[in-house]
Length: 195
Image (cartoon, rainbow, N blue to C red; front, side):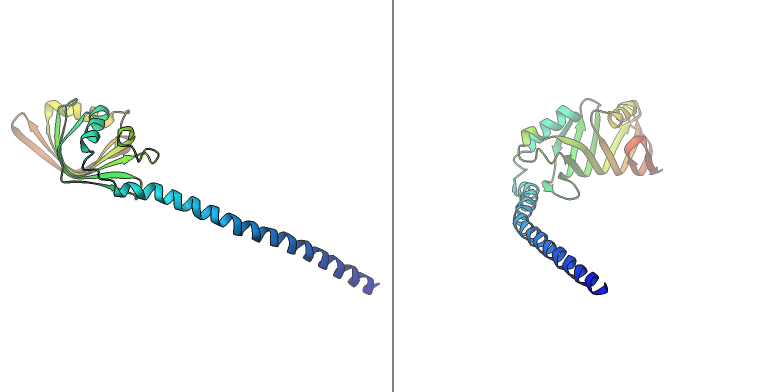
């Protein structure tokens, strides 16, 4: 009886093992085939984000300025350089800008401006979709009469503008009132800074 059981068990194991070998060999062949497709897909995905690094954005600042004026009312007067960055998200990095906002009557300088752009529209600057602007190290000279305009600019739901590590000089016409250091206007109307 035990001998018959052992015989049946051995037959079962060899049949399962044979089926397992067939399945595993088909799976291995499929993985070897699909690996090339995966490599091609990953390479194309990486190239989609890397190729804009080689574009010359200095020539396209005029078009970029028109897009910023339409969406944000910003006019960039001067800048030191423009470059494309891949990480953490696709963005254009403008260094040392002088700009003003004609719609809100604001003037400010910024050490760095990051223009976060949509990854789907990287190749054509005219159809560039801007997700948000991040001003880092901005110096804002704010007249009390324009404070409402500045808050409107920050709270506008059509566009997102974030100020980080910035300084605000508050004036009453020509009289200096106070300076707010290291101020950050973050999402959801959160403000951090020191007087």
